[in-house]
Length: 204
Image 1: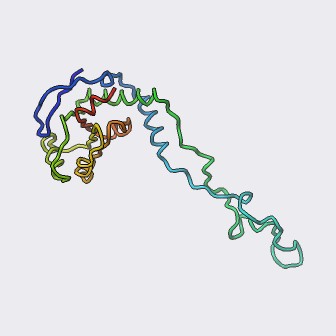
Image 2 (image 1 turned 135 degrees about the horizontal axis):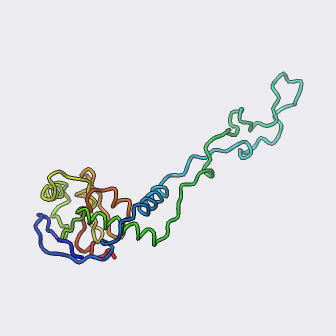
Image 3 (image 1 turned 30 degrees about the horizontal axis):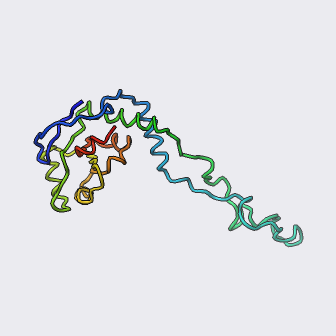
């Protein structure tokens, strides 16, 4: 399969042959499963508090059972004491958001997402992304030539490109990453995926 290649002025300069990943069958169930796992693995663990059996100290009875005029207590780590254990508090061991997804599923979901984007005309290929200065204006002007109304854009470079990163990072709904970091969540979370020519050739 061939995809048109444009320069930064949105002028067609050729075509690039892409891998069969861009012809994969759309599989919404697999994509959903992998995206849920991706988000779950990024979640911070729940807060965790100690109950009375885990709080340090409190093994000795704080005072005599009788003849003090005070309420009966067997431990200073009771939940009703200051510094005592917590009753029914959040426990990180009760809910684990981590999900394991094998490489074959990840790759299959990514291929399905890329194929869907390609079918919907939401894949763009630019011959190269080069700007003289790290200016937001440079990327903004390029976007004006590609879009009448800028959508959310994911820029994929072949390698780390600090100039493009610093020029694009202040533009709303625009993210940039290397092709080695490409994942199904970011592909589906952006309306348009813009590849450098070398980057899309690296997708297998």
